[in-house]
Length: 504
Image (tube, rainbow, N blue to C red; front, side, top):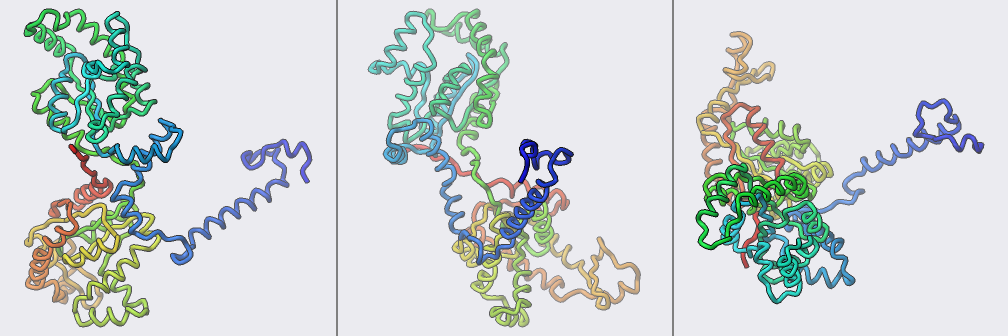
């Protein structure tokens, strides 16, 4: 029982403090030991004891982007806070489409927002919205209120702009096809008001140009104006530019992570191409991503070496299908003798048996938690089909592409010392002396004719594998190994982005 003075002294967080009562230390150590033992029990759970999620579940969630869907629904609920959440969600799912473009096109005066916005919206087949088009709805009481303020030279409040925009975005064309809004917001306060009330774009394009270019454009527009007063004066343009520059940095940070700056001082076709390339790609999801790589390549392409390096760099599980079958032979289970019979007779193991061994490995907790890089499988179209049907869908399919001459040059240099069992490469790792070199032997499977036969088989089977897996990334394999490793890493860590849907 601790005294009042002892209870008033901080305990574990005062490590090393001489004022800490010695009576509290055993309790501290006991709690630490309990936490450590608890972690060890969790880590030591066998696959049968722990809760195992079938691979089909995570594959389905990734395929249909469920993480982003639930994130979007929750965001809408928290922003709108409807009285009947269920009814609201049903309406949202029926009428709204989260995969359509929602774009802000912003920039300084005379940067070409309207011209560019009209062209881009036509390409995307989405409604093109501007402050002027929002004010053109004469039947809306909100618009009439804004017109009255404008005619009396008063500033339209950001909250009123918000309500007018929300009213327009609820129209069926915006809900089903998306929208492109140009010229709004133009202040930090407006941006915050729109964000707070749920008007959040998927992409924000900022047009950029020097002030002297914008002034020249404004002056050219004034000279070409047919109607008096259509173009604003030079002084007014300078004042508008000054106000924009004051607000630019602050309201640009409101959309950090969604912004792409585009140089507006270049041919219009190039600007349109760059903007379309940006908005046609979905924003990278914040969903947890588990890397699953299928690494393809012919004999001699270096796939085993690069799989090992990739697994080490990205902390993936290196799954070599050939090695799995060899391990299964010595495992002493029901499949061991069956698989051993095929391997000893140099016959291919049936696909269904290979898949059974492979799936058992991919469903282990380390593969489920860390991801994997798979090589030496699939080799045929049927194996690729079986892999996808098993639920183990790769996030990346990478192909190490080398010519037959390069592959044969690499493989046919392999020699083995029959006495020591050590392997040598004729040029890169030659034997130490002439005595060792005289007794070196080359394995029958490394003979040129045997290698060419394997290469021909790979070339014949590859189109079928790629047709099933799809989305292959080809990497030239006749490069420095470090360069190849960097390319593979950059491809593997990024999941393939889904394109947005356009039109009805």
